[in-house]
Image (cartoon, rainbow, N blue to C red; front, side, top):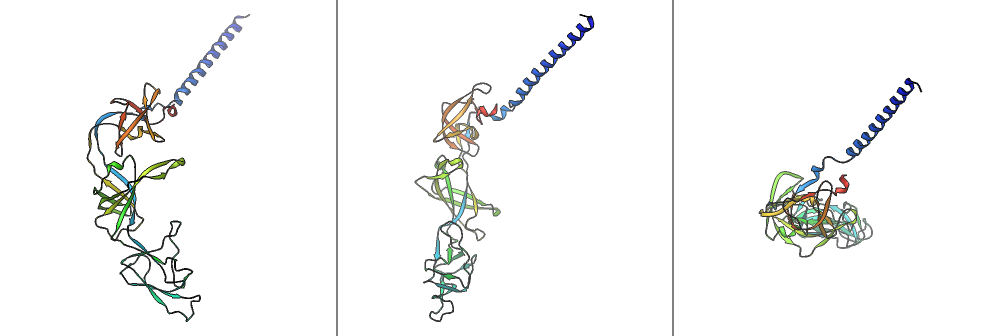
Length: 307
């Protein structure tokens, strides 16, 4: 075999070895790149410190006193004096009603439908939860059980909340709170916890899950005419901080059914699943009891998903 041929064979062999080495290096680099290097972003530490127990919950503005108004019999609405969105006084005429099967019949004399109390006129609420159609002049009413208007007492406004069973012991009757409304920017209203339901209700969540909540009613000290029933409200209570609590960021807490767990880091992506018992909870942190201690490092996501 000639020297040139040997040199060519050696050259190609070296080239193949370099290509194989490059492929191995590239594959290893690719594998390293597929592992998240921002693992620190998914780690939180258990520590002792003060736990600020501010409570902030979203709710809906409601009236605690509403009256539906009905006609005396079946017949027709033949006149409208006051419309929805208007305030009326007690005994004020709202509309005129005429009984009978025909609106042009002389058999019945039109009679007024009056307000049983003072308040704001709104549409009636259907059995499906939405507003009924507007009652207009000439409307036929097939039954005396057909609601023609709803009267809302605007001096009895309140905010309904649904508070989780974990947070329910943060509130107590008479506790002062502040209330803000998205529709009334820049204004804050004072209120108090008036009712705490003694029995939990089930609230449906995502993927068919359910959680237990308690209905809490917040009374408003000085209702404003800017308020409208159905507005979204945010209720905030400034509570005292708990001293020297064992706590962790709330995103490190996981729930399975009625039980709570944390994923405690051993090293790297290795972890152990530890059952814990959450106590008081703020918007950002939660008090923990169980086999956890200060300095424990917890995952905020299932470690298997971070690889």
